[in-house]
Length: 176
Image 1 (cartoon, rainbow, N blue to C red):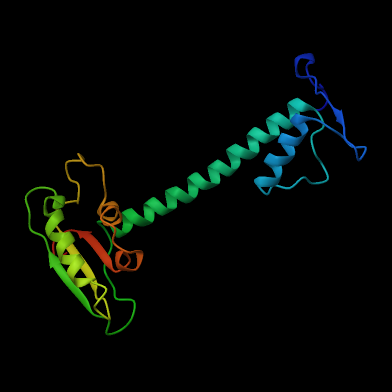
Image 2: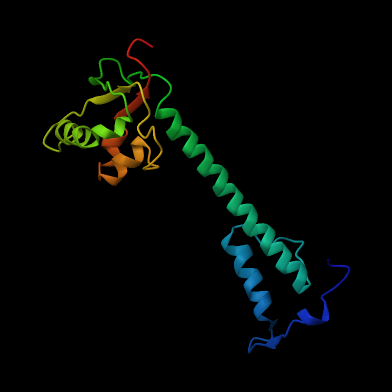
């Protein structure tokens, strides 16, 4: 794109500043995008407007891709905590409560009971909160109607982050 130069339709309009610099709106937008995304201006920078526009698009797409990958890892971590894996106390002798949900439908049919139980056990008046492990033969949202995970439910109900990190939801039987 540098070799081809700018098409006539993309001719850049430059303005002389009081300090003697020549700048344009397109040049300023490019500088802002490159600076905000922390890519940096660097020794090699595109000089044509078209090159700057394409570079800006690539930078924004690249940064968005990094955020998307991070989101995928976070969702995989949440899904791993919800429904699979095992519970192991992080410290020896750490208190925990095991709740076995036996139901023929989705576990979220017990949402009000689970919320009341967690409100009581993780009440701010208690000094040490125990870990709470829910075993269920079915997923939290088996039918897919609510589209929410167990941890979405905890977040929506306003459970503090410290309390949410002390709750596990494992799909399976108690013996598995």
